[in-house]
Amino acid sequence: MKPKETNNATTTKGKNPPTPPGDKYIWAIYITLCLISIVEQYSASSTMVTTNNVIGPLMKHIGHLFFGFIIIYIVQRIHYTKFIPLIPIVAIVSVGLSIFVLFGGDVINGARRSFRLFGALPIQPAELIKFSAAALIAFIMSKSQLADGKGVSQKGLIIALGAIVIFGAVLIKQGTTNTIILLAISLSMMVIGGVPLKKLFAIIGICILLGAAGIGIKLMLSQGESNENEKENITAVTTNADSQIEKGETIDRFSQVVIPRIKRWWYGDSIPKWEQKITRTNYQEQFSYMAQAHGGMFGKMPGNSIETARLPLAFSDYIFAIIIEDLGLIGGIFLIILYLSLLFRAGGIASQCTRAFPSMLVIGMALYITLQALFHMGIVSGFFPVSGQPLPLISAGGTSILITSLAIGVMLSVSRFASRKGSAQRKEITQEINALPEDGRAENPSQL
Image 1 (cartoon, one colour):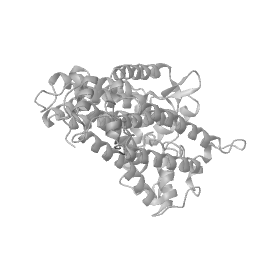
Image 2 (cartoon, one colour):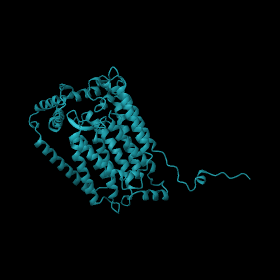
Image 3 (tube, helix red, strand yellow):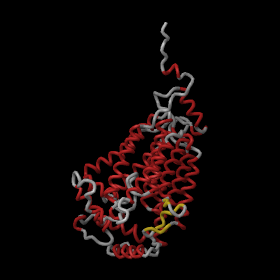
Image 4 (cartoon, one colour):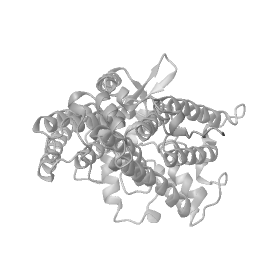
């Protein structure tokens, strides 16, 4: 008699089912962004190319992407619950590094925003702060869910607000936009975590008051403060700051750079961009707008950019302008859709998680990446005042690429190991609950 064939379920009885691979849509978005990054870095790095090293900048960027891929591959294979004890440590380290940079960081463009690890590898703590804030708020929101599943405890809100204030305080000297992104990430996660609107508005009010107080103190203490009532002083103040930067001096960027930029952005709205004269204070924005105008609908194709040779930081802070010039409006819209797709995919995963922590963690990582990208695009297109923000995975810069890769690795880990509604077996859910700390086992409250 012919022996009866056994199926997979019989042969693997008693063994744990194989772990599914990371979400294929997140992988596809990541790979597409990397390909765009390589092409556009080749197009935008002309100012960094030297006679003896034509492809050096591109190879350095590819090296950063490669190490980023290694991080993703390793992190996505680790169960997301293993990250829980590391979150407070990373948060403390990021705050410590930010404080260190305020006093001992390298002076670049008149500000201290980075330091060199082992004297070679530049590190920007601002990126680590935003990443750790997203992870820490996810941790706090998941631990603070009320028993009835209708909101967050008062203690949790106070702890979350305290964390935001500390992060914002050490971050504001590294760029006002960084602080705004931090607040946008944190407040968005609070909404998703079930914080009532009344309490959310109270938190926003407290943040605004603290921010206004900090700005007021900085203005009073600032020796280089410009006259608030005289628009003509904007050029004089910023030009003086530029000359100090060229000498390698540290300046009070808030009064000598940030305030004039905001005022120029505000007052400039009354004059069409194409009618404004190109000066030493606005050449970055103007060349950026020219690059975008050259792109038209379909672009000039990669490698044919005109403005990359004279647009400062075309390979980093203004790479979106070169993308528009190369790929046109269609390419810019496609890139926006890619980042938004990452956020929507994370929202889909978060809504299906049975527990609160993985749900909050995956959406926090996606918010960190997507909001960073949208702010970069908004700055380059003139929607926001000028401020240096990298475009995730595309701008040159090792810290940004590596931290973004870490965030994607965490998202993939959640997509692999978190139990899903409707498909998870009781045993799988029980194992996940047991792996979480006792006060972090709340059911998923996300309203996505």
